[in-house]
Length: 167
Image 1 (spheres, rainbow, N blue to C red):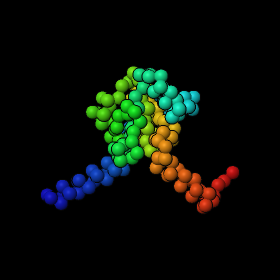
Image 2: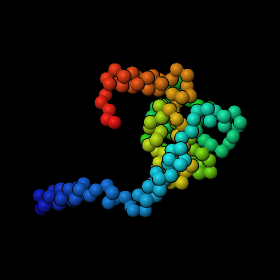
Image 3: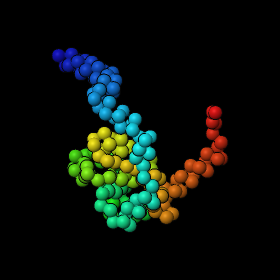
Image 4: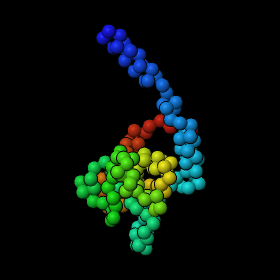
């Protein structure tokens, strides 16, 4: 009896793991995400510049919120933008964190260099949030920030390695 149960579990696992991811996601969800992506070029990819955010702060605008999505608390990484709420990018879709995000304001996501903030942005837009990313993240905001060093190292590496490029 025990052998039969073990085989049954293995068969079920094989079947479950063999189902392609697109079969699990509903067609409506895929269409919704596709609609968001199609609008990206016309919306400047929902990206704002540090100078623009600073201007909103100076004008004391209240129609936006800054979400610091770096994986580690801001105090360990050179500080934070004034008024920013810390929610790591990998935890932003938890119910208790989504409750912190207003749907009636621009939600500006900011990470180290502008890369990981893009991960939750598409999902948030698909959920109805007016989500944006700040170009180059905190590297564009904090003077001497380590994110700028990462980018400079990448640029230097590309120059030294001269990676192949097709035309």
